[in-house]
Image (cartoon, rainbow, N blue to C red):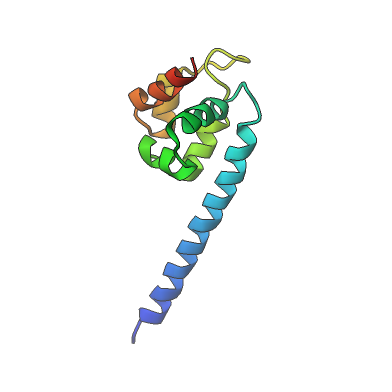
Length: 108
């Protein structure tokens, strides 16, 4: 029995799900830039100064676009009762803390 057609369908579904997750992430990212208290506003400032796309920023931070969107939705450290600092955020979202810190330093 040849499983090739079945495998092709699974690959197509996986590609479509990834594209859908990335599209949803871009909408979330755009929304977070509107709130000055979110990490998204910091990342947007970094993006504008470095001329990166959201995908390029995610790649630079070594995370996927949905993870970047989740990170962007967090309140900035020290605001609104946010108890996580940059180190904890980096660990939670799987990025390098020094890279994330660099993005935060640009806005300062």
